[in-house]
Amino acid sequence: MKPDVSIIMSVYNGELYLREAIESILHQTMQNWELIVINDCSTDSTAEILAEFAEREERIKVHPNEVNLRLPTSLNKAISLASGRYIARMDADDISLPTRLEQQVRFMDAHPDVDLSSCRFMTMKNGVYASGGAGGRCDDGALRAMLLVANPILHPGVIAKADVMKAFPYDKNHTCTEDLELWTRMAMAGKTLAILPECLLLYRLHDKQITSTTLERQRTEVLTVQDKYYAAFAEVMDAETKNFYIDGVYFRTKAEIKPFLTYAKWLRNVTKQTLPKNAVNYALLEVLAEYKRHGVKKADVIKAMLTFPPCFLMRELRRRKRAANTDIAKCRAVAEGLGLRQTSGSEEYPIYESESQVASK
Image 1 (cartoon, one colour):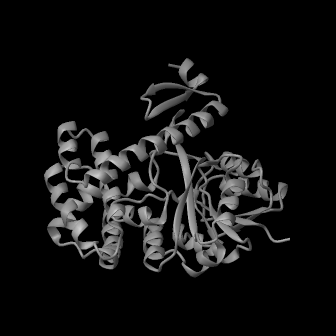
Image 2: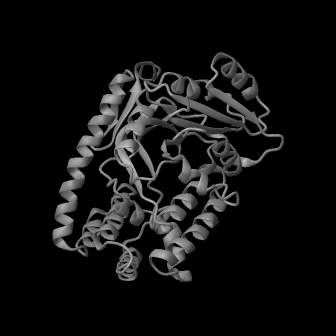
């Protein structure tokens, strides 16, 4: 019998967290799966760990690369070997919560128009856990607009129709932004994207992640991707707009209200014919929410919010508060199930730690 879902993973020197990641797949409530792991020339004990699991479980299929191919090409190799109706992503340092596959397959079956979806998540780093985001919209129109300003789709939380993944291979030239490149290419081709608003993954943050070691290459790749995406849904950015966009919008390292207002006015104007007005306003409002978290003065944020249509603003703020409360409640339930307790943060952004972590302080 063919599996319902093929989980694909590429690993390079992942010995530290690999066992925990694979065990989380073995403990899924839905059991009709296969796990395809590409060992991308690891030099640590990754090969031995994978061999141990493959011998123990026939659904785990390990394929070593003869040369280091890097993530996009390795994932394409895994996709070519997949036999499931759906293909799900998994990283070698994350943890899938027990009902992840069951809930994601059920969601995809219930929404045949959706080609690819992801899920909510909690981040974890050094024993500290936090919500990976709350209150965001999950529909295709909102995600298309959000892709103009950020990457709203968590890569290791993705599940997609197998035929779609096979028709849309990862671009091997994008080794830092292979996910953003793929989502935007799918959106430009008319594929439907969604997020299942359930917390189903623990997403590990650590110092060796690509995003913290190759920032300059990532900046270059983001602009290359967005040149194409903006050409399709907006208008190609000029040099001045690009300079603000990469620092002030996408990475938000230079969050400034005045250039944001100029950018927002331009973006609303150039997307009038390609995206719903409210979807673009929603994406811009999410940028402002991040500005607030990055320390921009409350008065400046309010000034910027007053440039939005009043009815949209009131409706969206109410919707976002209700959705955020629901999302946080789901994360709190996950935390309690893991034996964690809230130690800091706020009602909107609670921080959790294990009892042992708290005791060691």
